[in-house]
Image 1: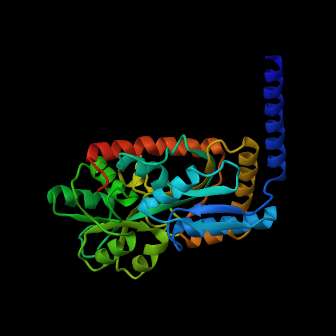
Image 2: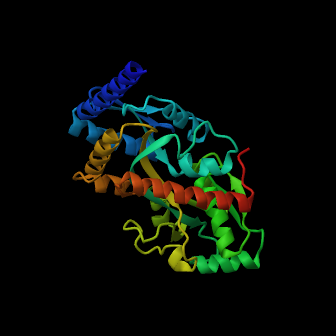
Image 3: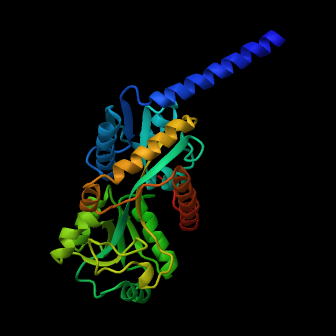
Length: 323
């Protein structure tokens, strides 16, 4: 019995020593950063920007691996099932970690239990856009018009259960209106039909919509962030336009598989924050309509928990479920 206990204790000690040594030598080989979306999107671009800086600072290659499909579910599942050794990371988003759980009755991963949060990377607010022919100049006038014409105004989203869909359902609820939902396969087609006048309104990113706003092919009524954007300083936030507490946008964050050694998590968190703060990064983020963040793992965990509760409530009240 004593010999068994001694063997167990020795193995445990060896395991601790190995884990500590591995963490000290991390990274000793290339690191894979899984992006659960196609190349070219926000998650992909941020992963490449951060990965390049991490590679420069840590002397190892950070390889972006696009595992697109099923609203980000395929890539997230791959990371959740990977070895928790710090060599597989995930660029997660609002969608993968908070709106997916709200609309899919069954997911092959748990946003809380299957991932170790590392750091927020960026936040990108959405802009409320309408066709210029609509006789409204601000959010208050839009709400008044919607109330006078119930069920007539049409909004486009990037798909059922998407952040833009949830954003309008939250807007409907807080404003006491009922606009009609038309889902599209992406924000690009949704905005294109709004520009064409086939749709009343939509949400889109600042970077994608700014050229059309400046050309007066779209009218921006409000920003979904808690403060005004430096890229569109004359556009008020939705909150200051009368819907106090309204917030809508996308965040991007780095996660590792659950049970990744705390030493590796702490090391990665420091390096990610350092990479985000590197010279020239803020300008590159701004070109994408995003604000660089950088956070502690605890702060990221709190954001995930907050949004899980927020979007689950919206989905439940609006009866939103993935098809």
